[in-house]
Amino acid sequence: MALRTKCVGYKLTIELGTGWRYARSMEQSPVATPPKNDDSLSGLIFAVSAYFMWGFLPLYMKALAHVFPAEVVAHRILWSLPIAGLVLIALRRTADLRQALKTPRMVGMAMVTAALISLNWGIYVWAIGAGQALDAALGYYINPLFSVLLGALLLKEPLSRAQIAAIALAAGAVLVLTIDAGRLPLVALGLTLTFGLYAYFKKSLPIGPNQGFFLEVLILCPFALSYVIYLQLTGQTHFLAGNTNDNLLLLGSGLVTAVPLIAYANGAKRLRLSTIGMLQYIAPTMIFLTAVFVFDEPFGTARMIAYPMIWLALVIYTLSLVRTARRPRRVLKAG
Figure 1: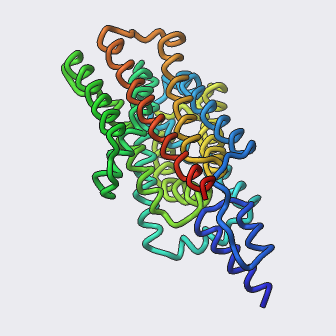
Figure 2: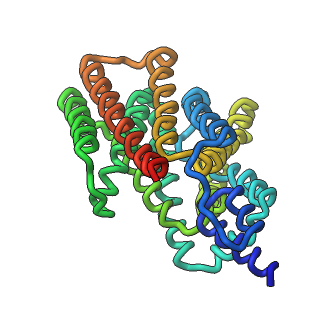
């Protein structure tokens, strides 16, 4: 009977996506206590590593700028699959995946998230190759604010005055860039929309992040493989076409795709939301600096106005996030 209690408890921790320490506490006692809402050193290392890897990603993608963006995305999908699979085997999470594949609703939700993340990858790869890394950085800067707006619109979550001010500033920045260019900043908005919606639907996927990522690339693999075979048959491929650098870069694209995502997933569950909220600006800041100082992209007057507006909006948003996170702790101390 005790063994059964342990197994049921452990299964619950997997479904809820909580950390290893929580699972262990369930094993030690039939009465579970929630995990501490605190930061761990391992979580910080995982998360910071993920954001730095994403920050350096433009340099990698720039080396593949001569390759069709769709081909790059196809190889990112194909070579991510074995890495994600090995992680699941190492963590002994394959049973969860088998259960997910037997659930049509879960597979359907994973198809939605897979479509969104593949579209996000495609826009990002094209933007870096086309010399629009600044717009890519802008898209990821705006993303947290879009997530707040999405929560208000779809989940009816109330907005604080600070959040309204931050969203208004971000909208003003987009307006400045639109008036200057005579069109919407489509790359920035495309990345914001696809990743924001991906994160929203991903939260509704009742499976762990590592299993979810494997399921997504598994769904995308037939399409990616078909496209790679088509390019091979029509002589349009850059893979195995005689260029060793291209071969290595395309093979490595799975590594630079899967490793940051897996590191982030393992870091996020060990850190407070407010900590993640502050760390998430590492990657777009690195992309911004790379675009200006390495790729030498033009930083005109409109961007000189729009970017400080975005940064101010993010400061307001982050401060409100920190204040919100501290309130429950103060209540606990008072109690």
